Length: 595
Image (cartoon, rainbow, N blue to C red; front, side, top):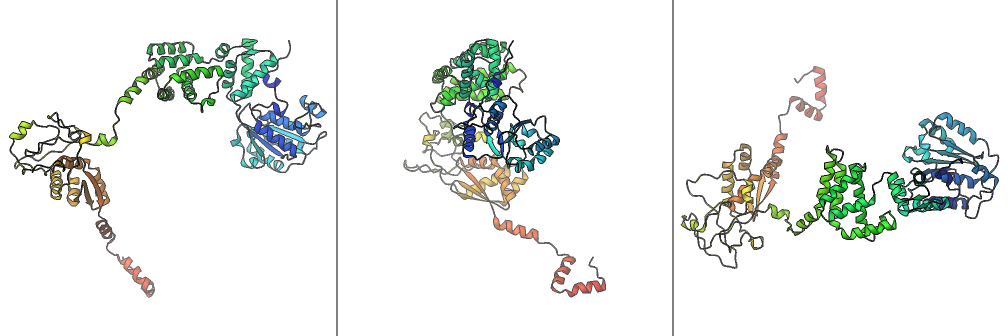
């Protein structure tokens, strides 16, 4: 039986041009080699399995190659290259810092730096996982790393750059390696399949590349696992079965059923998913990704963001044309909330099923919301106008929540002066209301009375419509004083009543200006929302607004009064002693005490 070599080692790149997905690093190194501008220390950073150690080995081999090509690649034919390929080179020393992280290991490394290379020009030290070195080991390595011999070159590799001390970073030339893109991994896997004589479906290789999460070494490990399971033909079904991945077809069926509002079909599909052994949160995470891909497929500009095969891209394109953007956005939000709240749910299956039920009725909910006229916040806060009485009849004050029939209004005795008929061009003037003698004082006015819409018995009356709403007339200052006094009498809060008695109220159009004696009083009056409800109900004017100001003069006088206090004898003495220093000498000589 022949010895098996994993693909990650068997197909490890031997030249810069074979490195996958790191052209920005390899091209920079080749240009530096061509110009002879080689730094004495390099630091390769990046995720696992992206080619950091591979590039370090290729660079070390090129530095000692006797016949470097014009493209700055190793010849792999000279004695130095052959010795490196056979792992017998004395000029290239590799150290694993994960297991050799103490000060003694670094000191032994520094001792080797003193000896010149026996063959070749450079002695290259490759330290992998350098972030695992201890603090003392880093400090012991600093001086050698900063000023090494001209024949010594250090190449450090790490996956956690943030753990390296700044003094090491400042002495190195840093290269950041990127995650390898899915198309690059697929192309590399296809090349390996051609070399190995394996037939593989493109969708299957895409699944492997996505599962690798940007690490080519992980992709090759998964490829070996699938090849051992499927043999010479790698199919999409074999990959999803071996990797325990939910088939894309389920997600497409879910979206089709949701668009048709077929809730029983949706619940049946979810039951099949659970019977296959998939957890609800993993399913919801995959379904959210599927919805995201549908959103990306709707636009030509975002379609390249889909890292899928051409066959699967066509399916996404067809379903995206049938899925409204509003549905996809709402469903994606529901899926995200379901995934976040999954761990806290006790009945996890019911939690996911409720989310799917909501998604099934999304289109109908969106359609209903689209046909509902929007209501602005101003219209919600605004109270409806009271139906105006007939111009030829006397006006009496009636609560807006309980309108009386027109016949009763005509039979009631008039309590206000007869108002002359208004011309059609000018709005009717509203007289200030008065109460009959002996009538009980009004109780505290509640906010919901102001919000209750009035009902007009006249079918032709359109005064309550927003389109025919008329501007309220200006109010009288005397009536405002009466209204505030009446509110003070009806309120049961003595503190607010005392504050309102000391405050001054003035009318400025439809704005009630209140001048308070201090900022505390002003804040208390602003929080007394029932005052404005009472005033709006009193005047029958929902356009009234309250503006509370502070009397700066009164507040300044109060602060001055607070600062005035009796002067003590000690203060008098220090004041006089500052003017006449002999007083201090007099106090010391006669031992005077002011207590």
